View 1 (cartoon, rainbow, N blue to C red):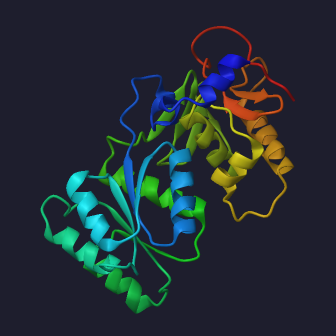
View 2 (view 1 turned 120 degrees about the horizontal axis):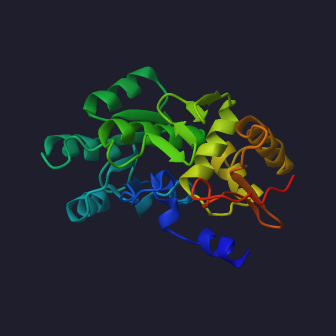
Amino acid sequence: MSDIHANADSKTDGRPGAARGLSPTPAPRILIVEDEAALSMLLAYNLEAEGFVVDRVERGDEAEIRLSETMPDLVILDWMLPGVSGLEICRRMRAREATRSLPVIMLTARGEESERVRGLSIGADDYVVKPFSVPELMARVRSLLRRARPDRVAAVLSAGDLELDRQNWRVRRTGRDVHLGPTEFRLLEHLMERPGRVFSRAQLLDSVWGLSAEIDERTVDVHVGRLRKALTAPGERDPIRTVRGAGYSFDETFGKGPGASDRTP
């Protein structure tokens, strides 16, 4: 049990690609430029839970300084900022060789089509209107990173005879297709990204359903049950571990040798 909790605190388990059983790739670095402290903290919490390295600034002029010091892999940029506006920051980034192709997701309360067109025409790669779904934003971050920096985000997570293809939304085990609903797919993806790390029901609700989800924590148990049923045929090992009083994890020993999983119904 102590080994399980030690893995729950491991930073390397959170790096994208770690579930492949290979040397983990460097975690992608995300720069958040947002002056609303609560929103900035919420985004940082969810991104770090996804295994990203996060840096945060509140002003446009601070963003320019930070970009000159450390180059991120993606920028989440608010439209309205003190100092220099997000729109101007984006324009300046596209004018510089070093940041010309740096992926940018623009956050804004402006939902009009003309404003979206303006943001995209200035060089933003994606545009998200507040309020937004955190899981949707996380999906957009991963999608944009896969297109811009495919070397930094593994398109396929695999462990033992189990393989999850993020790009094609496909799961296979021992050569057969595993049919999962969208929630079960995101749940498996989240667990496979951090093998061995134990997540409480509340943490899984935050990361898979979103902090705004008004559902009971026991809902997690229902979806974990469905996931297990879909993944595990008779005689096959269950890759999902239940840690009593703590939550669930993807078995870090799955595919590394014989032995039964510590499954708890």
